[in-house]
Length: 172
Image (cartoon, rainbow, N blue to C red; front, side, top):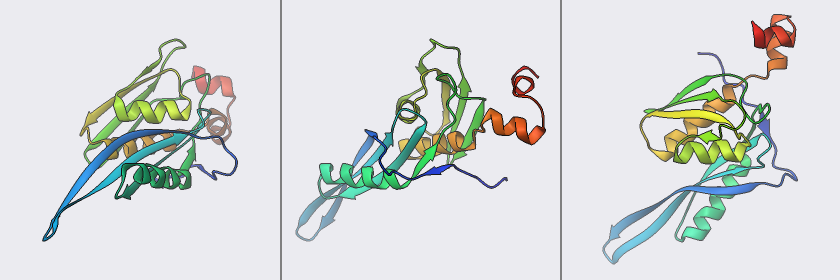
């Protein structure tokens, strides 16, 4: 398979909004009783083409979310968003989770379920058709969505690679 060339971005002075996708409570039974810890899956984005995801683990929910946000800021990627949608169809797989993302006409909205919706809205996509196939595990669905968004190609770079005009790329 081709090497993934995700467009990494540094957090710097971006104004990022965070969304908590999933919180899991983990119980460890010891001789002294039960100890609880929490893991939080968080998605951050500036709603203008930059999005990241992270996982935080801690003894308290708020600390886990904070750690998740810090981790997400380290894993930011740039997504090509054109007129509120993506440039082309994309399929990606992570573990047993498979995702299919298709561009949509203006006014369609984000037609996607739970975990995918959080990622796509954080990326700034306003019109898209998306389907999660296979596993519904939020961790794998988020990772598969990121893989799909990372594999998207800018139409300008495609035109340069093919040495054709941008109009020809869209109209065949």
